[in-house]
Image 1 (tube, rainbow, N blue to C red):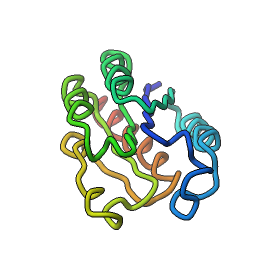
Image 2 (tube, rainbow, N blue to C red):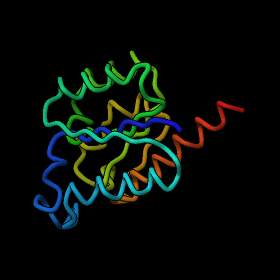
Image 3 (cartoon, helix red, strand yellow):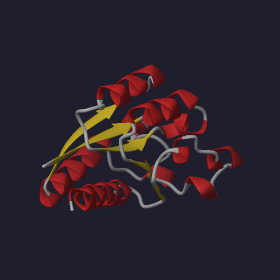
Image 4 (cartoon, helix red, strand yellow):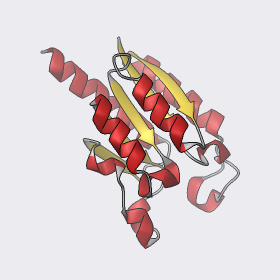
Length: 148
């Protein structure tokens, strides 16, 4: 069974409360439930973490080295500002998919900058909660390809 770490960044814990017109009214707990159900369905083990602190996100990425086969990351606003998160991803060299619930490229200009995308092999944007499921599927597919 493959192990995937799902990291959610700043303000993702406020899903269902913040900007419902953009993010919908489903809670963070509902997102995690959906991720875990899909992971079970496709036969991967998943751990989900959320932090509003950049250093904690970096720490989780570093701890993933040797423990996880893939990372799904939605850094929230840190996407557009954090070279530290990019450097941590590069340091561990774990296959990574970047996810955003909204289509960040269709929003404010500053949201079109993604440091994480300089490392992630795939970017899933604007698919809502389903973006995480797509990311899990992508990581499972590449890990299976590596086994052959």
